[in-house]
Image 1 (cartoon, helix red, strand yellow):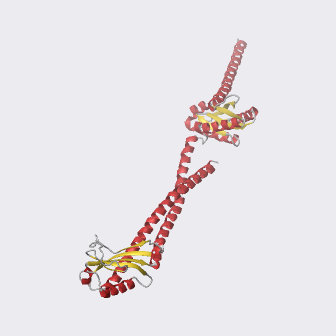
Image 2 (image 1 turned 135 degrees about the vertical axis):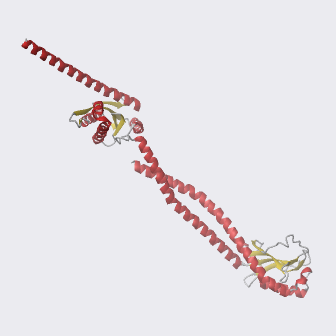
Image 3 (image 1 turned 135 degrees about the horizontal axis):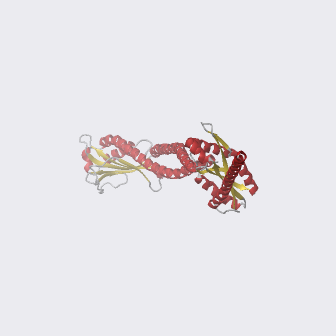
Length: 402
């Protein structure tokens, strides 16, 4: 029963851990997955921006001389630039709008007719190629990419103009989303595998902790010499038995036991012999008890047997008789002497004799010591009678000889 209860508790703790750990781990995975996806998309877009700049720079400087980057382009040059930019983003992309901005902030070319206007660029000298997925009205949300590409002169490497372009490129956006989604999925699968791996580990740890706890608990409830329950074990089982009996209007019996002649055994044979007698007595108690009854060593040569849920006092009296007969233990010493250990027993019933476990034990002890004292008086009276008869015999012998 204890093993089943411990397994049930371990399973309950494991399920609790699984549930309580899964929820925050799932939330963490979702947040981390989102951050990872955004980071992956940003890196992919940045890499795409560098590639696009490399592809467009050669086309752009072929369409316009670098010196023309300070003024609004003429019609012929503007047409060449328009063709270069249109073709520069590839066959799968559609240019929505674009413009070239000079170092001074002048728009020198555009597809929307804004050439000649001012558009300051504050970070012109330190600008890096960039791209982002944006939303534009009446345009699919997931297919628009906005580029900002500084164009550098081949000879000096200095940025002369900035190409700002909005491009519809569903294929590029799909590839980036698929790639970042795959990264996120792998991350979530990894976290799931980690969680699944932790379950058996936690189960093993919980089992070990519970096992050690049960071991310590058992040691606290068991007498180390005899293996019987100790006083703490009696308290735990006894209070539960009383509570259960009161609920079901049943009775609880208790038999208190004290070994007779045990002091002589200790005095004549030493503590080693005394311990062997206690171990033998414990074994006989266990053999004499029935299922559900609890044999307890209180200390020294004092024992108790708890009988929960009994139907009558006669049942407990039968138990007391069995225990008395079982505890007739002959002890033979090395020098040939022999002492027969017997037991004095006393019984009490709850709730007729007591309502609490302590009071039940006191009542059983009182009855046990009454039997023990009666036996002692009987032995003393028997000894006195023997001595009286011996005295009379001696007197008769003296008279006859006289």
